[in-house]
Image (cartoon, rainbow, N blue to C red; front, side):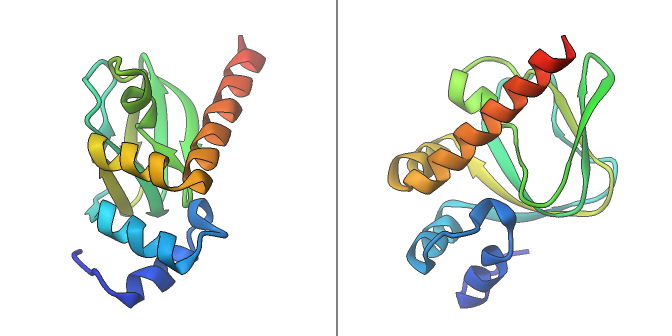
Length: 140
């Protein structure tokens, strides 16, 4: 999937992660990301691997596993794989597509640019991280 047009901005505006972003911000997101599709069973993130990209789920569902144990499900609007880009450590979980998926992929440099240029994106990522931390503390 390689659409880079005004249609992309409309498409992204319906994704919960990008809710409230300006049209200029959405155009910048399109410029910084690659749109991709994944079939059910595709491993998006593999625990222990170095992190060089992260994803925002646009359509579809994925499961998150830690040491083979299912710990969460992720759907549209979720970001996965960002922790390794933030802390420069190996992946802490495996993420597998449960259904066919449409995703936005950000490389390390593009992810950093996204956070540096868009306070709203940075705020969303920090919210995701805080929620995960609270969930992990609640289950330990």
